[in-house]
Length: 273
Image 1 (cartoon, rainbow, N blue to C red):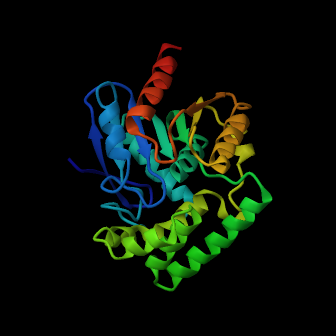
Image 2: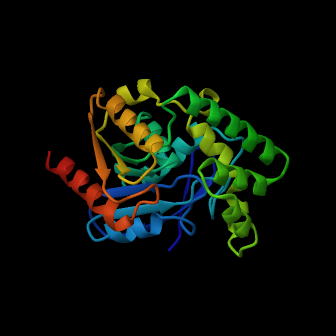
């Protein structure tokens, strides 16, 4: 059942809850995804036996409003409203750029108890930063020109989707769903600190007050694994500390049944401590 909460700027945020009892977990989706279009449903189902799992549509996606001009702090405020709906304390489970958003929210004092960050796609080299800046500029131009399809195609090319597959998707029944969230690609670029080429935010991570688990897939590209390792290393200097786990056999599209037990174990250890 869809429920709604209201963010600080008045934007209505849609969410649903799986599970009746246990610690609260808020799933933060990455680029292009929302409750009806991504992995959050599978993760919620895997965690619901022992947790209250909040899946939501990030602003501008699904049933959530877009609000006014975008700012990362608005998405942090959205998470603050969701954590409040969860009772004031929650673990954030962030995927890809959603992991970057979850880490930023954890530093904002909004009731986050701990963070699980799966493959936050920060840049760890000058080449990657330059490539990201070029990508971000192109996506912004596409969206401003009213061409969300071009933004989606640019994103897919950026993450390595073969051209023929993109062409097939353009002709598929799923393409309108991609178009609907295409404008939010600009938001994800800003979450990653796109003006600077999405570097690992070492200062932010070193100042986090909560424990962090950073995970990656053993079959993921080296650039994503390097980013995960660098994120964990930076967060390990914080008061909350950090762990780094590699899930063997997994890629960026992590299987819910593999990630969920790792999340549950991390939460349980925190409760025991």
